[in-house]
Length: 143
Length: 215
Image 1 (spheres, chains in turn yellow, blue):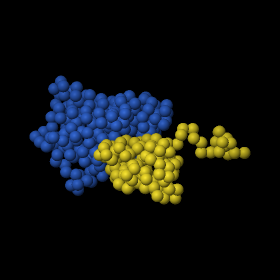
Image 2 (cartoon, one colour):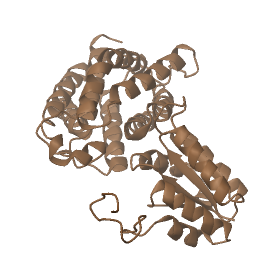
Image 3 (cartoon, one colour):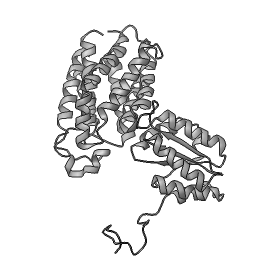
Image 4 (cartoon, helix red, strand yellow):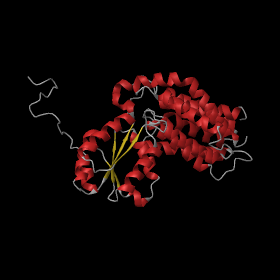
């Protein structure tokens, strides 16, 4: 079963998201890398590397990585450079939104979807609307 | 000047960042998320602590820079931690074959500076003129090479590099940011200095001062 790796600036944010995923898809391995080495807000290439390695150790099918913000991509890139090619080829990085992407990816992974399908599931299509069709376009509350 | 230049520079840089942390954070509050000084201070303090405790050996400049880069990447956090970490690691890789004795040549330091700058540009997919660290770092590397090419000694060339870095940082004021968090602001980023360019200039000045002090 494909695993997920959550990368973000806030350890608390990722803890909460992991709890949501454990409820939605308890069988899926979810590895997290949140905050700096000292637990401050930020990212750490070594934490990310450890999280990716941990996920791959438990998921031979591979792992999909999701990020909270674009600035995490730099540390992620450094971490992936330190992976041997045999491991790196089992990793896919998602452009999806962290929360919605992770929930969708977890459900796809739990259903036995392959790496490519989990990646697609994590990338919520542009223009996807989480509100009902009749919700006012200007964001005001429905009458 | 011996290999201790690098250790002396990193200690001086840590002290300067500690002194400037409020200023750097204020700059970042204007166009970013207001934590650049806090993050840099946390990272360089961690580095200083590890050096003082002997967790990072300070004798061989190449490995010192690589370990410093790892520390900065893991403790500064975010994009600036990754970019400064990459810069230090690339500089370290360029100096790895050198024991630190008898003394650093301008060619060695120039190669390390250029490797650091190229590492930042590649990881950040950026170039000068985009209101980033590179607006200070590229002019610094250029000025160092130009001065060295006409026979200016290492300390003198570093002084010119620091002048160029500070001028480059000041020149970020009218630029509209297109990279990083500041790009969220679009035109509202105009009229503010780039915090990363300012901290880059600070680091180059600390290197020049460490060299001038015979550190």
